[in-house]
Amino acid sequence: MKLVIWDVDGTLVDSAEMILRSMALGMAEAGLPELPPRQVGSIVGLSLPVAVATLLPEADETTREAVVSGYRRSYQQDRSRQESPLFPGARDCLDRLARRDDLLMALATGKSQRGLTALIAAHDLGGYFVATHCADGHPSKPAPGMVLACLSDSGVRPDAAVMVGDTTWDITMARNAGIAALGVSWGHHTPAELLDAGASAVARDFPELTRLIEEWAA
Image (cartoon, rainbow, N blue to C red):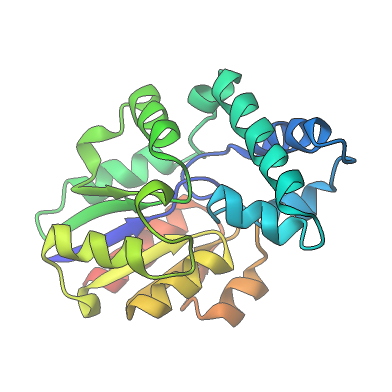
């Protein structure tokens, strides 16, 4: 049996606008100016406190906590967290892989459990995954804990698993857990960054990604 572990934001779901809005409001609540989109995108995938600390290395703890609090409040009130669309081709890819009897799927995401539960319900994704792990129960990416938990839950060996993600945090998490990694080009980090981090290939769209996964699983 093989296991495909998916990232969520920037890989399966296009939540970039919601993340940018939430971070802008978090910064405003702390009395700080809005950050450039590219800078905010660079930390997508990290757990929120780690993401804010990475964005604001010189800020004191009180300021960071204000940003985190404002982000969470904005996110919880923003209905788009449930309405952020799947990327084109994502559903077809999941459906095709789910029909295989030699392959399982799981999620490993920096989202909170509350946000992940809402998103799974909104897109009716619950039937696809044998395991879902998020930032609430594990150290932030790129620590390997979420991947290791997916392996344990599924009973799949590391040499039979692959991580699919859009950031270097995903790719490095996979490498830290001893599994393969594939990147996607439509997320928050560039193909060059993903390849440098250790991705074996970077897909340009979901049809290409489906082919890469099926070739890996053959």
